[in-house]
Length: 110
Image (cartoon, rainbow, N blue to C red; front, side, top):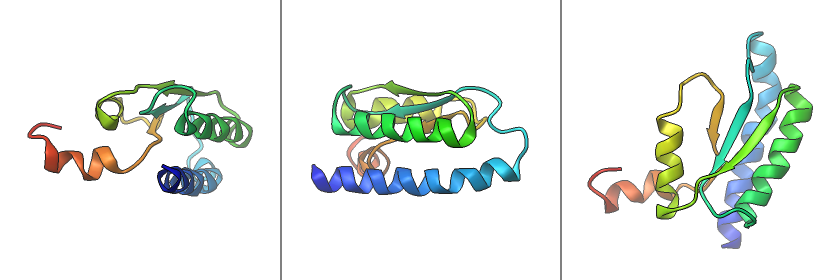
């Protein structure tokens, strides 16, 4: 559990560190509220990490950032939700690699 949390935090912070550069590269982003979707129950470690990252992102990109919890199916529900979102750069998945790496080998339809 701790290892998963550290890996998720590292991935999120790596992306967050590059956001100021991305924001300067394109003048039209973000054009709306940013949504961070986390695939585990509210109040857990992943949720707390996502909220900390959301607060820091709000300061850096000067836009509203919302954390949305979509728990269930080992992260598959949240992953499917994010994959169906508009590709406008407004919805991001915060979580582990399990739904992306392991689930395709376990389920016929992911």
